[in-house]
Image 1: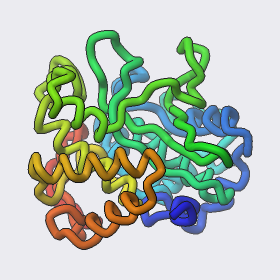
Image 2: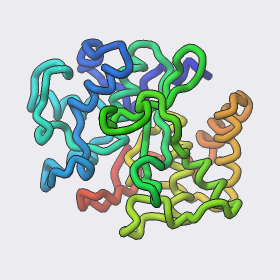
Image 3: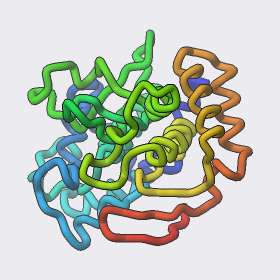
Image 4: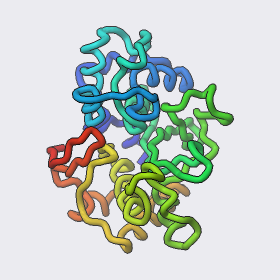
Length: 275
């Protein structure tokens, strides 16, 4: 099972621009710093992006992300880029570039979908981070975070709540689902949001690293319970659970991507897209 996390997916494949990943640092902290030099968050940076620049957040494929970057900066990814002119993205894009670079080096890596308890005291914002195998264990690393601004190791996160963990805690009455979502002042939170994010976590786990605003399939509470239990078991090292999860995702038409997604983007785009 470890081998599949060494392989690029259709989303993380750099295509003809793979040489750009070869020039990135091998050291993880330095790699994450280089990623922050390429991507700027569409909200968290405090910069207002509009029009075509904001639409960059809907770039699903790494090779397209790299093409956009190189169109503005035909130089190695480590060459300084002004923050305002970096590729506009979100946590998923910081993560996709990170895991693509790690996979390029033969390091097992995957994206994890869930919630960050470290952005606010009373709300858990939806988030995506990278997870890689360091030879002994899986390590969570948040490429979006400037390590100088946080009182913990951003390259070995002490806490990250996966979608499966949040869903099961919600089902057991241990958390308030309204405190999990995009923003405490927006309607994108709560029970349905947690439900949808279980499917997102399963998709990312199986190499479909879609946008966070891509929707497809039909997931029920019962299905989410089953998938979350499989995810949690797989995280504990249960290989059979990992295989069952993969088979379920690949064969269940209600879960697997069928070639298109309904994208409801913060850019304003709302429509069906082929993937």
